[in-house]
Length: 221
Image (cartoon, rainbow, N blue to C red):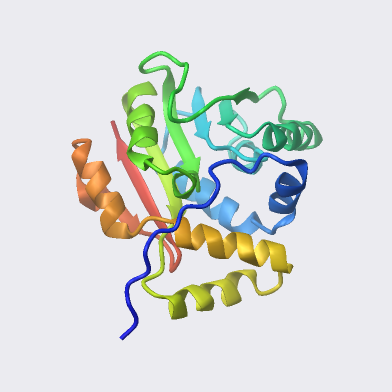
């Protein structure tokens, strides 16, 4: 019997233009569409949305596409990612909807209850201590505001990891496949995420598997 896969951290920040371009060129369209569709299914107030770990701003662009009134702030710790995000927002004519900020999600500069909702796609697997990011999200969202996190779930063993890489990154180049593999290895398990949200006073069952490779936490503060 294969031993359970342990978490192996990957670099917290992709901070070279090459890494950012590699990430941006991967096909995230279906994943991003589903993320935004599911986020909107909770009927969040989109007047002041915070996107944590926006990367190259693909999620905010998809959000404005599906819900044109949406506006807010998108933050990332990588200047290289934000440089591409600025280009992407301009191309999509979304620059007026979302403001970009070079910010560490572990220590947000925003005041308590600033945002009507907080969303984040695939930030926690980059962070050594994910609880810090979750605490910050809870702090800056308004009372009754939606908190919506989605990320990869760590496979149980190497066989499952190999299967996921082959299935979902089989058409990508070697570097992109390795990025996906490393991200899966760095991800949290479902019980680990449930324990984190429970420690913050939220129901552990508010974290659920949402695909064969993702968990989702959706809750109102």
